[in-house]
Length: 456
Image (cartoon, rainbow, N blue to C red):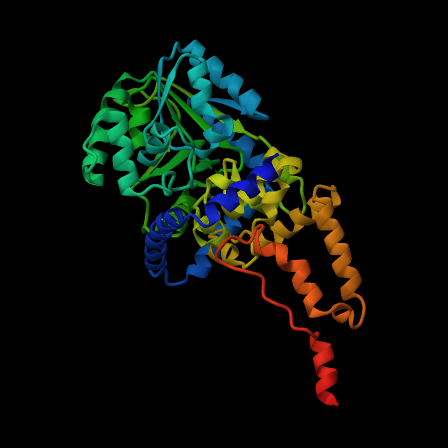
């Protein structure tokens, strides 16, 4: 079902010129900023190597760092809860909402909460969950999910957003981004004060202090945790860094590769509940550590390094496939190259192995990854696993067998004439190729036949 939908959606969006123009414009701005941001490094490769080694160290000693984080986090006054999958995480969240009689939740951007469909869960408990990140707020108002790991509303132009707000809130249809941002800011200010619970994700979990590090550009995470009496953190168990003094490097490589900034505007450390003498912060803090397929990925000797990802979004911005088919076509929480690697382990190879074939294997994603994840290698191993599990179409298997039979034989490609080849490939001009290209025509004679002829 998911594979068929993927191909249907891909065909529909690939030649949508308006969509392509919006994405090219928005990613183009990021590309320019990131290129400028990387120029600040005297030795960018050294920074990437160190960042990669930190994350590999985490995965090499994963259990020990998780235990250390849990111990220090509890010592700071927080309650640490473990969730094997989305069902367990959902039940923990339902319990927290009920115990605290929550009616309003303010939520700072967190892709991990999308794995749980948190907003839907809160609504089922009779609780409003309001996104406070501007991009997330826009897609929530539109009834959509995040389009991009870092830029949730990347698929929308400023005209799209103005029209959406005019329809939903009665703002002027020609309001510019500054006015619309001010409108949202005024609306959210009231909600922060009224909220019962503030929810954030975590960019990093610091093992030696038990701190939760959140990185954002709008200050919404700080406001989401300053006023509500309860702070809930939902984080994947791979988000660890061993030591607090490593954050200086990780903040910079995340910012430079994700948005091109020297450092993100707000980098906040949350270490437990409100202490004596402090005027802000929660009275209760829950940290939910989510597995949801991560240990399954970790157990795979060929793909485990994907857990080093710091969610900068660089591989999405670089990927020619993502820029063509967009974020929604993947139909999963994480899109682009990293999503194609993670999702089969998170949601099953049976339904999502096809995503590992949604790549040209050009290697651009590997080139831009700040923690040096060998994404193309992992995509290839995932493809092999899909074939070994019998998850590829029967027609594909037959076609590859036929190709092998022809390629194994000297002169195999010259067994039939160019006319026959052109007739056989003619349907490709009408199915799957789209309106902008057509199959190249075969010569009447193969290359070998032409060489033999020319030698005479």
